[in-house]
Amino acid sequence: MMRNQAMHTKIGFVLLLLALTAACQRAEPAPAQQAGLRATISPVITVTSMRLTPSPPDTTATVATVNKGAIAIIGTVQDVMISAQVIVLKTPIQGIQYVALHAGTVIRSREGQPIDLQDLQPGDRIQAIGQPSSADTLLADEVHILP
Image (cartoon, rainbow, N blue to C red):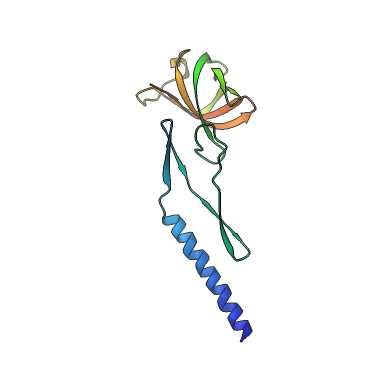
């Protein structure tokens, strides 16, 4: 009898977990709007000894958390080093002075069209989204010239 009751409790717990997982997958994450950025923040559920505890979202971003570990910064271009594929910012943003590009980095104009690095000019305000790669460098996946 006790073994049956324990088995039913475990089955009920597993069914509850499955229902919660399905509900989380169906739920639309809410967009976060801040300084013209669009980011998605969704809670994570951690299971600890028969209790469900929501975990706080990762909040390490300067402006917004975009992907796990990715951050978005807004700054003014001081210099463009084309051969090194690096943008130097006029003022460090949370310690980041350099925006390094990789082969897959997309640079977009004010109108949203893809452009080349040489199209950036000192004085342009940019939004760079990517992963911090060192204390003063962001490895950018996207760079947008802001209006």
